Amino acid sequence: MERPYHNKYRSHEDLSWEWVTLAWRDELRRLVAEGEVRFDEPMRHHTSFRIGGPAEALVVPASRRELRAAVEFAFERDLPWFILGRGTNLLVRDGGVRGLVIKTTRCLRSIAFTGLEVRVEAGFSLNELACEAAARSLSGLAFAAGIPGTVGGGIYMNAGAYGGEIGQMVLSVTAYHPGRGERSWLREELGFGYRTSRFQDERAIIEEARLRLVPGDAAAIRAEMEDYARRRQEKQPLNLPSAGSVFRRPPGSYAGALIEEAGLKGLRVGGAQISERHANFIVNLGGARAADVLALIELVRTRVKERTGVLIEPEVEVIGID
Image 1 (spheres, rainbow, N blue to C red):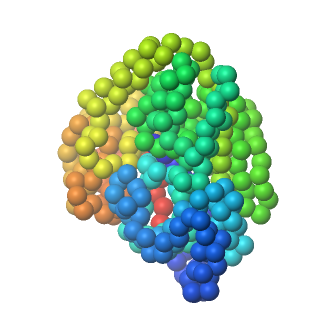
Image 2 (image 1 turned 180 degrees about the horizontal axis):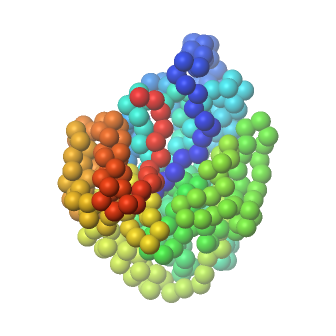
């Protein structure tokens, strides 16, 4: 589960195509010499939905220095930029993404435990973090076992499951603002709420976080994680590409229950289908387009509103152009 953090996209017409000249491509490659730069890279290869048009430039920095250099490159030229973790909870439109998509899973991967505290960079896997904590008899993150996103995405959206949320464990977060530099915030400054944080309104790159965990019993923690994994296996369509839960939980109810009540399980548009296993998942049956998913989302919202009076809101992040 993962929500991305990025600057606002300008319209297709507002973008200057000057930036794609060979000189600019060469400069970007020079700034990310140890990492990778790929032009016109299909985003379907980088999202759990397996959907998405091409990124004008996909940048995979090898270090924090290269990460900052890439985002400053975009900032100085007023180009759109988007920070990508593992591409979960994300739908990329069929027209692709203008500007730079900067992937953090190679450059922000370090983790260090000191007593009950852990310092972890944003590109580290939430699932791996939960496993590392359990191995040290530290509890508080069992809910994150099986969540396929990154720490950065988890903080951005205050990811949670089974009554737990990552914001409950956070002591502080360090982020980088292009043009302004690095800044750290304490938990009380981060505005954590249900699937939200202050970073949804910040033009910043989450780089690392400090979390404080709770002493526990390793065997008990592993048993809890295994129970959550079993529940996910039983209830969620893990065998098909998806972006996790599509809709936020409405007050006093569950989106999946409302969708099922409206008789929409199994409904299909093109290659996209409301899962027959869990109604709050849309799955890619093969060859689904973003347009199929978006049409299905709007159809679900309309029918649920007509049937129950509740307007459910999407949780999945949508980026790019048609």
